[in-house]
Length: 277
Image (cartoon, rainbow, N blue to C red; front, top):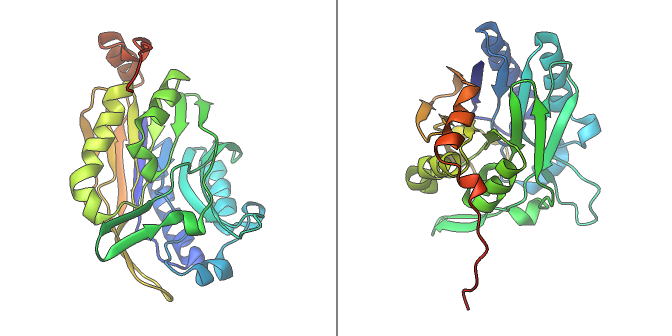
């Protein structure tokens, strides 16, 4: 099955970002891709909470979600919208970082709110407090498609292996890990973490990523690592997109998951144990 990862350099203008994303989605479908994936925060990258309050929308009103749903229906493709930053009705005003799986008829097959918040100081100059602007999700999500069961996750989730084991033991054969990864951590951690999640679960890992220096009108500029990747259920790197925006297509073999899990059936080998004290 032809599958496309779209690598973006989203700025802080959702309408401009939608135009670029839609062009890439159309190009991917035109090259035969039946499943297309976009990165985390496809609609906006911004370090300004006030700007986000001005331009973000609730799910029912979001222009990016509506536009990409319509495009998926028009093209007849499955579409993973890696995530969108969306307003919520939370009293504290925090946003949702929400991933969507869109069916070929344009319907929302599943959605997932990022569980693990990126609250870190990766260098003396680079600090992130995602939980200050976004509220964490509480629900793991799998969804059935014609080509396999998909487990949804987002970026920093990749460091929490128990989530992916739970998804795989619930039947997920394909794990989506859209990201806007920090260059400081990406250089050392991105590929090993993706390969570990694939190897541990015998699943495809599909990770569409943001890349480059992101244009902003307010607030600090942000850089992301790029290197969108597809990892086989055996842990092989099938695709590394490098650092330029664009589309990257590979063939996904539906039989590879069963083969990997038959060789190493680790998902069935859990054992209870005592300790540590």
